[in-house]
Picture 1 (cartoon, rainbow over the protein chains, first blue to last red):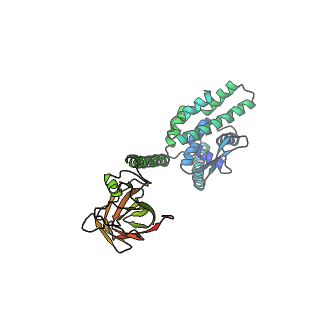
Picture 2: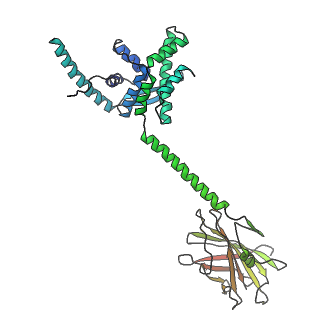
Picture 3: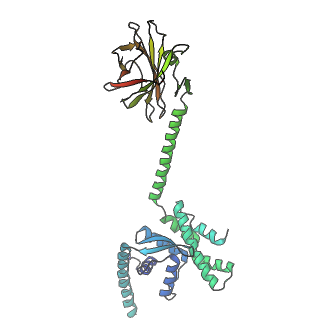
Length: 106
Length: 269
């Protein structure tokens, strides 16, 4: 039986956006910092993930111009996104528990 | 072109919807700029920083595939198509109006009255030649609506002489009428079956071109143009010199309406 991928970049992105809205570069930095440099990705690949989440209405985006004149596109998680994140977390914990149990018996 | 812009161009190449493509390009460019700023802080040279930033961004072709798949906003396309159709519809309307307006024959200049287009020889027959005949202007006022047309008197001239049955005094009242035809520009068919009856303040009735009585009316009308309207002339032969008003019963696809034209003498006449 095919299992859903328990952990994905989209789940991590939703988790990062849970606390506050961020733009792409911030998300990459935060992912790097919070995973203690374990999760590193080609940074351009973040955008298809973000735009996919936006299309599925799991995140919303807004553009803002900074004091330095830079245009930032901020992403924030939606209610639907929070519910999806909750589901993903459950799946991940089940998966993690199963892997831990197998490794414990090895 | 700088390598970073080429990278962005390649990464957004598969987004067909232009507004989305521009927005994504802006977002990716800003991200690369953040990376360049970071590399600059570490003391890297400009070229090395750009190479490092683009390497960190990844394969633009792979990203382009994903972005192209995601950015297919049918609503956006629908909006664009509807805008195009609206513009096309406006263009067609303008062209049609222009054709209606400019395809009309040139202005026909009559003394003191510009007819918007062809008033045929019949108009000249109605109006006649002023020559040395005694004539003076009256100030007409009157307006009525029928069949979607609004008809008003623009000018009135009283002229002496020239009738087929000569009696003294013999006066002809020439009424210049404007017919508002709206934007459609459909011509009011101005014929005997439209003019039901014509009478004056003295109780005289006028018939259509019959010489059995001394009093009859003659008419001619131009074709119509949208907004410019239609012109008509109506000559009443045998009117009393002191006619205070005339009434024309006009019926066009409905019960006849009466165009009551009050005639006032101009000061000094």
